[in-house]
Image 1 (tube, rainbow, N blue to C red):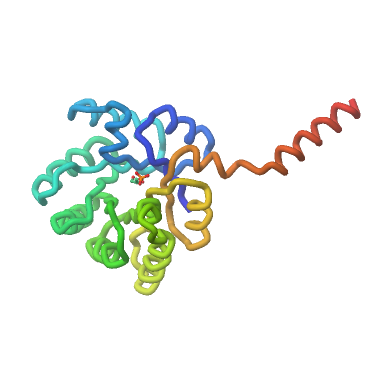
Image 2: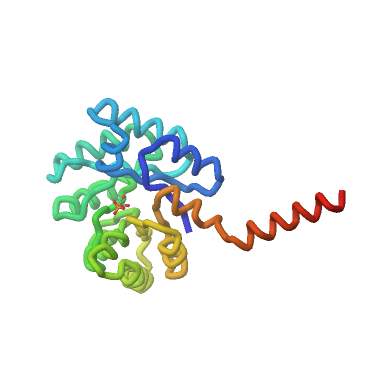
Length: 217
Ligand code: G3P
């Protein structure tokens, strides 16, 4: 399972990269705004800085919602750096844009996936990744993990190459359950990734080992 970090915060990206388990980064317009990155030039420079901080795929989202606009923006993003993956919303023109970029060999991430049907359509259009938002489904009392299971079944039935990128991951159990179901990738906050480290018996055991070592020396 690949681990992506879902943030535009460079310090957190570097901290996750230093851990040695990071496979990529996902961003979205809200995450960029949260870091105060505004204006076209600053946004493009920030994507470049993220690409230079990590070695894997970096999803950069288009703002346009019409085919021509998405193509223009996506081509400019893809030209920025070879690690850029063009993030496209699951709307009608987005499906056309996925096909366009797929035919050109440009990687895509189809975002805002909330149903198995949308994931099927994105795979048919040649998306590299689909991003089902599991946390946002949980927020409205729908089980996001069931969606991951449905997409896994569909993609396995037809051997689609599209990777399931579980997004809107909020905590460690989301990561563990996505891994059990067979999501190809998860993208989550640094807190969820580092949360996997924690176990009180590890802390207790280590304290005991160190105390015993001290006694014996
Ligand atoms: O990158 C998209 C997704 O991960 C957003 O997560 O927590 O805003 O629902 P969240």
